[in-house]
Length: 146
Image 1 (cartoon, helix red, strand yellow):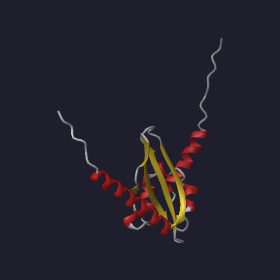
Image 2: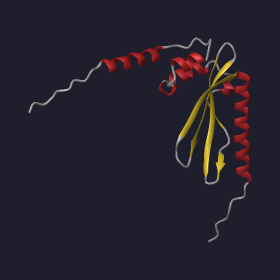
Image 3: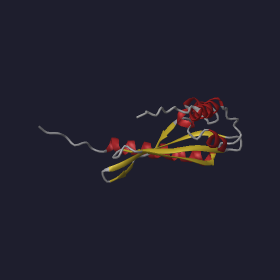
Image 4: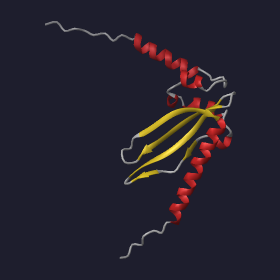
């Protein structure tokens, strides 16, 4: 019996490497946030890109903004948004996301919206989170006697 020798075809690896290099060296021009989604849909692979894009976002809206937890019986989701970029036309690229604490599953979606709508949404998330934290702080804690 003759053993077959398989050779690995590197052309596919080289193609992926080429695409990765193109994305890693690509710079967003600030003109249209849809170019970000078209060019770098896997933005989590390029955290340095997110910091480049964040320059277009006013400082008070940069980074992850927590929202109130959505409670459904014993299950709840933690919600957050991040305004990734704002283009010269006033369109914002917003990453909506969260985590389900029961399943530990994460969800996210990328949305386009006018920057004023994105700012209002961020403010709603902040207010809801602050209200939830305040309500939690004002809830009497059970005393353990023993």
